[in-house]
Picture (cartoon, rainbow, N blue to C red):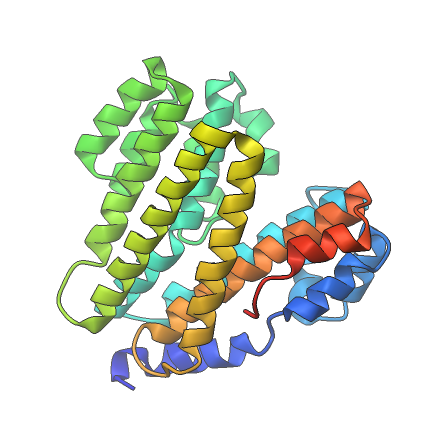
Length: 297
């Protein structure tokens, strides 16, 4: 193992054993209610912290569970860059910053809908590179298009893209704007993953695979509608994430363990969301199993 990855990969190995296995998530999905699932999760120190934090945002059990899932995801991903330095840290940031794009897109969506910072800020959840303070700053940016200049200063989008996004935010189609934001974000992620060597190549290869799957989902959305696209997206995500998590067990060196851990966190998050929906929506056991059964993360 190279020195640049020694400390971080040791931390990742320790954290990996604390993830919830698919069969444990299945048991949560069959616990009977969101309150019962929360009671089970609170036996874990990691999840107890997320649940205590979630109670600042929500009071009803379904909302607490949904928020805790997102907070746990953010906490795990945000920890990773701090364990690495130099080029290794840049690669880790490329792996985790997709979460920040999600958070920024959600805030900007609400700004486009006319909501002010006072309405948005109480529900902001932190990202991986952007904490809730930075995200609240984005929500307060005036005019709203000024948020893109801030993102450029933070090194999350290019300055040229910032100008283009400001114009599209004001006048463009919402779907096209969000596609532009994602593309701009990925250009900076690729810049973080630039450089020689197998570690950088691995991250770029993963990003290319993500992009191919996203194009398949967009095609399905155009041809078959939202329901079919959702099924395709979930199936592709489980296959991709579970494969990466499994392969990482055989790659103790370099960026491989981080790739696997990020994939395992994302797969766990999807399964936990499905378990939460099953409990809130009253899915039958058979329906829940069909949605949750997919590989082993």
